[in-house]
Length: 134
Image (cartoon, rainbow, N blue to C red; front, top):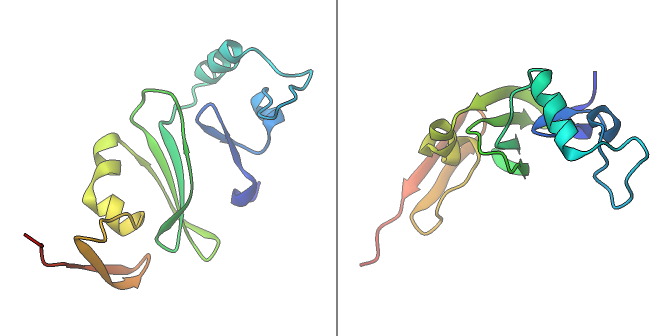
């Protein structure tokens, strides 16, 4: 089993290192590096789901996000508390873009419209709606 902090992503799936993926992400390609089309084909053949993005959340804030060029709707969210994985969610586009997910889980909100009144993530979180300036 690998520590979550050391996992990288390959073609939208989590792997422990570049060798498991079969490609090199660095400036110097390794002799084992394969053509990108071959890697994509292998990922499809093994039945791994393709991701649009992977997000790691700790303490109610995004600490790491990786976006992929694939036109899929799936997002993998790993919710952590003090370095311990508390939940893992696989979300479609509508669920990822929802206010519940954006504000509560990811801590993304417009500070000109909302003020965080209480934060005891992952158990409770409350926002105050600020008065509009017309």
